[in-house]
Amino acid sequence: MITNIKVYYEDTDASSRVYYANYLKYLERGRSDFLYKLGFDHKKLLKKFKFYFVVKSCHIEYIKAAQFEDTLEVKTEIVDISKAKIQFNQFIYREKILLIDSKITIVSVNIDGKIFKMPSEMLEILKKQLSNN
Image (cartoon, rainbow, N blue to C red):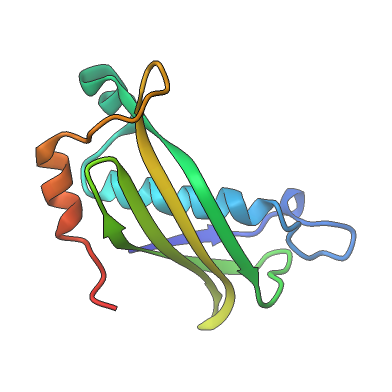
């Protein structure tokens, strides 16, 4: 799935390039939008099932810099999934030029921070999103 991001002045450093840590925010927005588009709202998951997602690992390769006022595309795809873990490949593009290549793993945890199995109905919907790559 694709999420569009506009780069604002506040996202940049003195050189007008996106500050490296802000890419994490863009990737988070891409994963959140991915879940929202499938009908999963974080607040509702916490209220109904008493769990939420946390990042377990993150690998980012910075290939090219985004600039002030760029419009970016965050492409998010699931590459692996289990009852308590989702592995994503995420890419950030500017006009079809690859800027960021990342691998992010999130896990589901309960309100006590313990690993939690996702509800089966959610897991089935997410499994249908597995990338064939």
